[in-house]
Image (tube, rainbow, N blue to C red; front, side, top):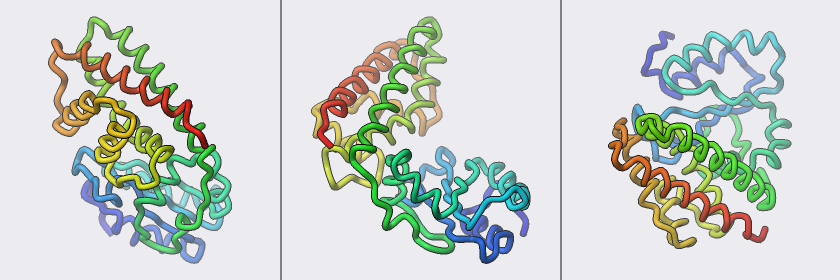
Length: 240
């Protein structure tokens, strides 16, 4: 098989199966592509690859395929064993819940369907990561005060992570969580009564690959910080 920049998840599946053979437990597509939220070149493809074991020789054998896959612009697959995936539910609840909601089985078993994830673990992870992101953005705002272009880049770079965290926060308040991150943002904004406009604007700039006009940078950054603070207060007070 020849690989190029247009290599698809199906191409990857066809290539990895002969490399792993009977030791392939599951290959799962998750994230925006599986949720119907893929934004073309602005998005990538996320894969979860589960094998019976990952000895060094096996990792070396799939190395060339992973490098070719990365050259398409997508990250290397997450490499788990079945037991490791089950044991990760308490430390990666946010990621695994999102995977459960939006995934496609490309090969093997559906290992996500029956994973049990504690709301308490979810609240802890969402709060910890939101606080970390808030501190990071505060630092970036202060350091780049005289560099609006750098501020704009920081906001765009943080948008995807923030949307994922806000979708995770919504799970603490509603059982029905939209698959699309922007829909989840709007639902959370209504539930917690905040204005989602700053983040909608940042997401628009990211999709269009545009920088924020210098005159708007400080105000948008401040509004985004206030949005995160509002959500954090609600997450901290959530009962799980």
